[in-house]
Image (cartoon, rainbow, N blue to C red; front, side, top):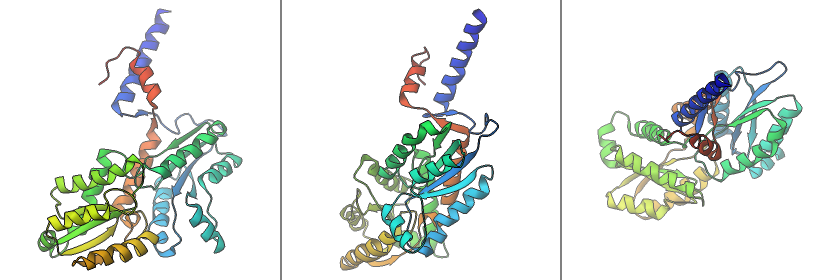
Length: 316
C-alpha cells in the first residue's frame, strides 16, 4: 500500500511538472505506444484557394515539406472552404472537407491522426475544425490538433521578425526603412481573436519597425485605422503585403483593388506584393515546428489542469 501511494504521488508530481512546463500542453509522444495494427496519419487542413498559381507556391509547397519532414505518418489533405471545394469540383479537382477526410482515414484503418491547419489565427476556422474533430473522437484512439501560425507570443514575434527582415532588406535597406511603409493586410474576423492582428502591429513597432502597419479586411485594425497610422507617420510610399496564407481572391480584388485604389486616392504611391505567407520558406518552417511540437506534446484542457492543481501543488 505504501509503495502504491509513493508511486501515485510520484506520478502526480511528474504530471504537474509536465503540464506547468508547457503551459497548456503536457509531454506525450504521439507514436510511443503505437500498438500492432495501428496506423497513424497527418491531415493537413487548408482554407483553400481556386487560384492554381498561388496554391502551387503555398499550399502544395507546405504539403510537400510536411510529407518530407514526417515520413512516419501517412499524408492526407482537406479544405475547409465549401465555396472553394465546389468551384474546384466543377474543374474536376476533388478536395475533402476535414470531416470527410477523417471518416475516410477511419475507414482505411487509421487509428491516430495528427491534424495541422494552415490557418493564420485561432479564429472561426479553427473553431469549426475542432468541432469536426470532436464529432469523430469516439472512432479513433487519438486525434491531436496542431496550432495555427499565430498561436503563442513566441509565434507572433517570430513572424514579425521574418516579415520585417524579408520586406526591408536589399541594396537600399536604409533608404527603404526610412521612406517606404509596409502594410500587412490580413483577412480579419468578428471574434476576439482579431486582437492578434493588433498584437502583430504592436510587436513590429516595438521591434523598431515603425514603418510597418497591420490592417484587416473584415476585422480590426481596419483600413481607416491603418490609414491614420500612415498619416501620422507622414508616409508617402506604401507597399501592400497580403497577411494571408495564399495570394488569392482577397489579395487580387480587395488588396490590389480597393485598398490600393483608396490609398492612391489619398495621395500615396502604392505597390502590391502578390506573395502569400505560405510561399515564404521560414513561414512554412514554423508550421512544421508546430507539427513537430504536436508529435511530442498533447493539449491539456482547463479542467484537467484544475484537477492537477487541486492535487496540492502551488501553480507556478
